[in-house]
Length: 115
Length: 109
Image (tube, rainbow over all chains, first blue to last red):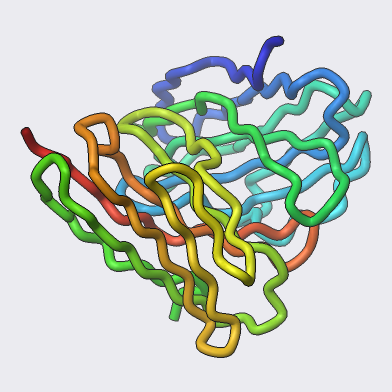
């Protein structure tokens, strides 16, 4: 079946521009996660949804970052007034919660470059 | 100090070699442990979970030492296709996964 998909795959933005990144999780997956991965680093947690509820947004680096999942399926990560330090790969992952060993399946990521 | 620490490498080994990666974590409340593999410019993919008793999957062996808060991954008879970055992952509860920065492995002919 289809995996997690993300769009766009690449985004170049001018500093100050707003961007919106989309994630389509695996059908039926209740949990959805956003991560930010800088070059040479591991993914850093941004935020987590269970269905439409955003249960944890402690990883969002500033109030310029906003995420939503209004119908409990597709999610959008919005970054307002982008800065150069926002340049990174933004990864979305989904899982079907069960045991603590549940697997998170990652999408291919959106590579954001802010000039 | 980061919650999950890994030796960044790079590890450059010949085909057929045995290589071991180490990882330490700082939060003793961590419940679940994993190794993910990430190829260049690709997304992370689960390699294996790590269980307290240690577990093996083909050429891969994972070990966990809760007392020392230490996780290891051993790769035997390494193949060219094993070249990737290996991410150590620690989970505190069902939604809080913390990744190490990764250890880069290159297997050469």
